[in-house]
Length: 178
Image 1 (tube, rainbow, N blue to C red):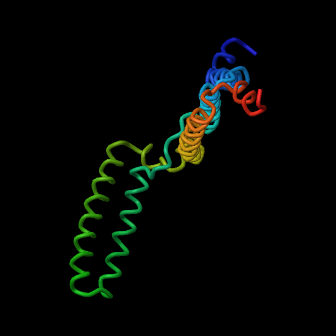
Image 2: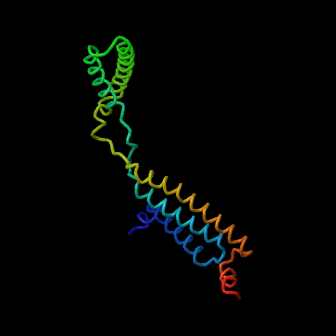
Image 3: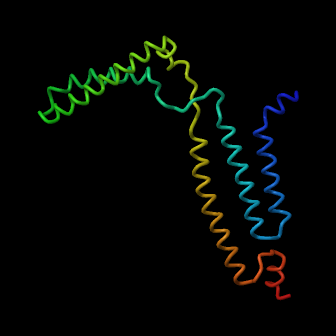
């Protein structure tokens, strides 16, 4: 492994550093508040790990490109003309308005596709999409992490009220009656 390839994995080095720091704080500190902080640092390293693994080089969000949207708008334009015979007068007015808007959007998108050259027209076969699932899962994990941190700190406050300390060893001594 070259130095360049090792340095290229800096995200993973950050994850390892944060994970070990959080793990050390949890194990070495007997203060309950510091333990909660250590768990949060450890949890943050897990978030970074999943987000780093979910990153795709040159990937883009899974959003429909303008060229494909233009094709869909043209297809929708044809289906609205076929459905006009079956709708009532009020619905016909709304459909004509929607058809006009769809036609305008499709026309503008088609003009953009033509002006940007053929690479935009064939974009659907060349696009690399990033999977949004890891990011979505981490957003959920962040919400759960905040809730569990709040619960842990509430428990620490309650323990402090009962024992008068947040030091784990002193709490164990008081529980044993020493």
